[in-house]
Image (tube, rainbow, N blue to C red; front, side, top):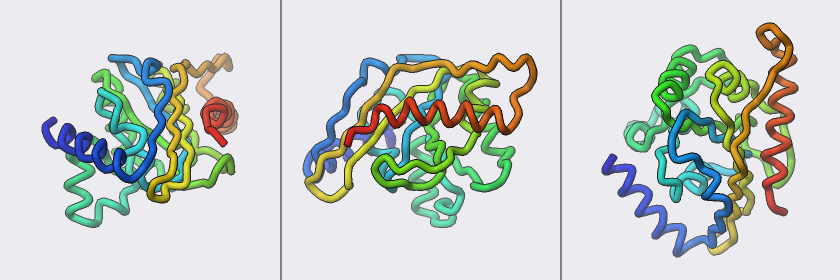
Length: 194
């Protein structure tokens, strides 16, 4: 996509001038195949700091409220994002996730669903775990840290992909998914630098 390349180029220039972005673990990003990138969520620019150097397009879930603004909607649609209604079982967003994963694409999800500071943790939503288990795709964990103040350091650490496992012999309950999601977030937070 031409717009995606233009945006990534513009972000490289912008971040190169205004931030010191340190990215580790780019070699851990699989070159192909369905994949869910899961990261902690510290600010509005997370998706851009995480994805601007990844060669594959990351289809991030973006809160539906952002799509009320025509320019933002146009922009998000053209960089591969798609809307999700938070706090509801958004069937349309779920169908989009499964379709993209089936087509070998990479989805970006912030399981916490809200911004946090430092290593402050909130209870993660279970959607990412549910998608990964039912689609049989790996999780790519990413820990991000920084203040996002101009000229500050932003650290993006990409861990090794891993598959979630569930041995219950039945469909996982909400409690099972919550426990699996907590374990997943522990791996993400292990990548967050102080």
